[in-house]
Amino acid sequence: MTQLGQNTPLLREMTINNERAKRVAETTLEAPTETRILTISNQKGGVGKTTTAVNLAASLARKGLRVLVIDLDPQGNASTALGVEHHNGVTGSYEVLVDGTPMAEAVKQSPEHQNLFCLPATINLAGAEIDMVGFENRERVLAKSLQTYLDSQDHQIHFVFIDSPPSLGLLTVNALVAATEVLVPIQCEYYALEGVTQLMSNIDRIRRALNPELVIGGILLTMFDNRTNLSNEVAEEVRKYFPKETLNATIPRSVRLSEAPSFGQTAISYDPKNTGSLAYQEAAIELAQRGVIK
Image (cartoon, rainbow, N blue to C red; front, side, top):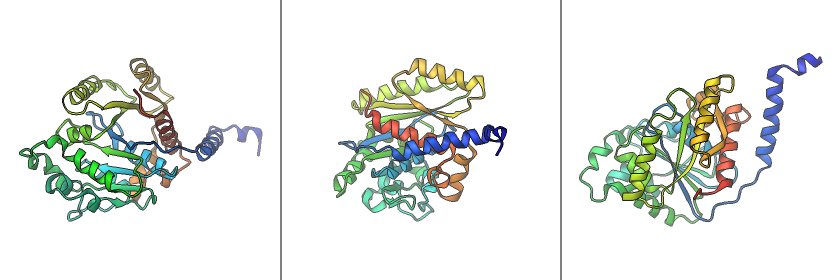
């Protein structure tokens, strides 16, 4: 092969990705002493919440950690990506929240990996907020059910990722009350920080009123395009305002990340050496290694 051929952008990217994949494969992770419960939250839609939840979860499961994904979005996209059935009639998060079904009866193992589990969401969940209005301590229903589930397990669940809807309704409040940390995906586009200030304010409200232990577990830059000034400017601005919270790993725009769920897979199993998949694997490693931010 000619020297010119060896220096094509595609070959350079393949070489770099092979090196990244090798570093990821060689990295070992220690299990946290206590279960880390992270709610993926951003009131702005389309920022990659579900993609982030399932790919971080799959990455950590592949590293030998036991991971549970709680699908709290009525669209059930996290359940789809994890290959878990969530059609009408499947017992899932609605039954856990509204009917008091023990979570252990609803959690399914994902075909992605033996260490990966999912509490699926069906379309019934769309009516959960109305059905829960009259409940006593309705903000804590998920927290109580999840704690009972974690206590009942013979083997520790190391990470829980809660995929919440893009709104601050009762489902999202339940997700924030049940969590120990919030992970905020921010899309690298115009108005990226629009709403984040409000989100931080709402997190403060939850912390004061309902969950004093809640912390910002991290901010993840998504849909990053290093070819544009805009993405770089947004990333710089986010890091300026949140220097401690923002992960070093950034998630690029990637068709493969979008394609994977249509095959009932996460990107981690669909195309593990794709740039987007590698970025999520690196983000998962960073999230696990840095521990809880105080």
